[in-house]
Amino acid sequence: MRQRGFTYLILLFIVAIMGVMLAASATVWHTLAQRDKEHELLYAGHAFRRAIGLYYERTPAGSIKQYPKQLSDLLADKRQLVLARYLRKIYIDPLTASKQWGVVPGPDGTIMGVYSRSEATPIKTGNFEEADTSFAGKIRYQDWQFIYLPTAPTSAPVAPLPPPGAPSPVSGAPNKLPGTSK
Image 1: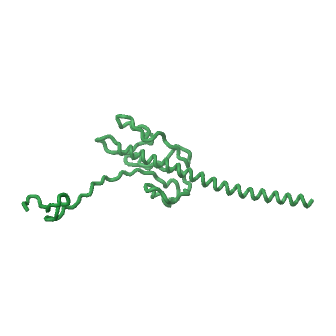
Image 2: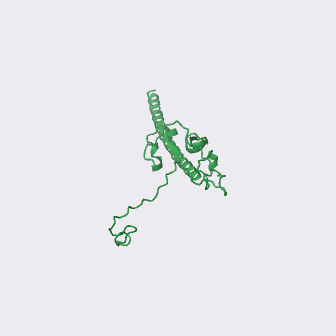
Image 3: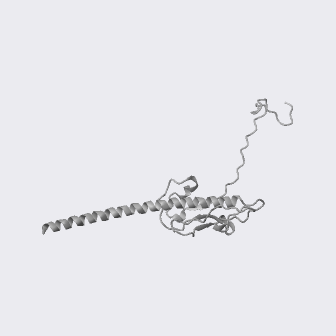
């Protein structure tokens, strides 16, 4: 009879150890799954940002540059003479499993960016690409906003003129002021 109690105790101990191991592996699996979803979110967000940027920059000549009014405008830009597609499809938000994205409003009811509607806490909090450095330290996925902001046109820097009498950097001859004979 003592033997049966001892075997029962060992069996309970083994079941308890298996339960702890299963709980630990479930936690690891959940973390890996969330990291995969974060990676998919970054991919889709970058695709939306790039498509919105192309739509904005490829506004037909003579028109004021504008953002799309709907995400579906990225699938077929009807402003062009030849059909332009900036996205093949509207991506599914991997965190909410929905095609419903939050939109960052632009001027005149347009869309200048997207974000996930998930209120979950991200695992990734740093080491983002340069375009996503604003995501560092954010506490919700909703705060990861993939916005296209046009860059201001920069002009090429103009080199200052050398002082009169100094050798010209091009010919090596002395520099003369316009309208002087010396």
